[in-house]
Amino acid sequence: MTKTKIPEIVEAKQFNPEEKEWPEQVRPWNKITPRDMSWGFVDTALGRMNIQAGDWIVKLSTGQTVLVADKNYKSLTLQS
Image: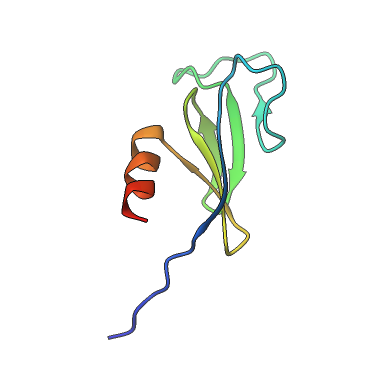
């Protein structure tokens, strides 16, 4: 059985739409409001994902960026 090394979190920033400057990865919607009421999107290793207030933009040791919901991020950080 081969063990897969889990990438480490290098950097993480929680998205708060009330902040003056959004993280550079967040692209706001132009003139539309999706049904999920997201604020915009982030291009990630898994494709383009909608971002909600409270989501975490996480950069991994592999160089990939992923989007993680707040409740999932908290469980990830408790394990490390």
